[in-house]
Amino acid sequence: MQAKVDAVKISFSPIIFQVTCTLLKLGILDLIAEHGEQGIPAEDIAKKLNISLYGIKVLLDVALNHKLIWLKAENCILDKIGYFILTDSMIRTNLDFIQDVCYQGLFYLTDSIKNSAPEGLKVFGDWKTIYPALHELPEPAKASWFKFDHYYSDQTFAEVLPIIFSKPVKHIFDVGGNTGKFALQCLNFDPAVNITILDLPQQIDKIENIMDANGFRHRCSGFAIDLLNPDLKLPKGADTVFMSQFLDCFSEPQILSILQRTAQSMSKDTRLYVLDLFWDRQEYEAAAYSLNCISIYFTCMANGRSRMYHSKDIIKLIHQAGLYIDEDIDHVGAWHTLLCCKIKS
Image (cartoon, rainbow, N blue to C red):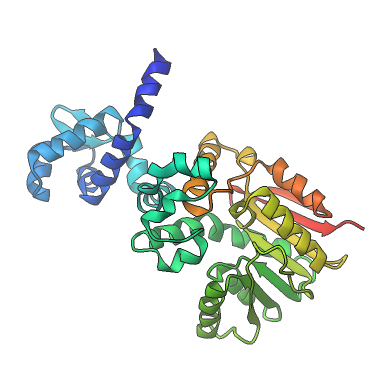
């Protein structure tokens, strides 16, 4: 019977998701929270928010079923699940990402699986992958994408920098530098370090403007490259190469190609740091669950070929590329793993 109940919840899960988004957008959960343990009746919610009592009640009935709220007499009180929905930054970031970036496109998941292509991306425009489109996505999709991406990377950098700079560092290649946030932290951390950001041409233009605005253009340059082109080689000359939440954006054959070309650019003293999220390395079940769901974003919206990987899959590719792992550190910033790789002698 419990299995059947869980199956019923799956069959209606898009409805509870949209109800939750609506409860947030209309300020209903905020209003209930403001009244604490005393609660507030549905009639008062309707009057204060100028929404029909019918609309309020159909939303609250579903919220009650899913323990977002509970009732004391006829008053609505925020329950524990509703509390996390309302106040937890991770939950809100995930919720906005799924609603604004993924929800409409997920209708085309079956086509994405069949065609190995991000068929859901067409709800935003005509692109082969999401990456060249990031700065052209409509709002609120663009804001929610970058908020989601930065949420899971930015908080790790403070822990990563002392590890990287515990050894002599003069020149860093930041591969897939995104908006340059890691580069900026490095440049502030060490006043002598130089950085080259490797990314798509349209990203490099924006990153160079950011570096100009922050007064770091003399120590940070861009190198435009499409790393999906197996004929394009990475430049040489860095003692440190950094990839943050980067390899999971590609298929296994593409990752192998990128790692092989990275290895070709490295000397015996160069260190490659791979900072990524692996679903098998998570301390909590909710984190592993989230990462496997995020794989579906890659399937349907991003590129149709990548995913959040098991650590053994990436480690295997690292070795196939002629590299070995010198350091392996879990729970960096709670969820990430940092792999320090060097070329095999």
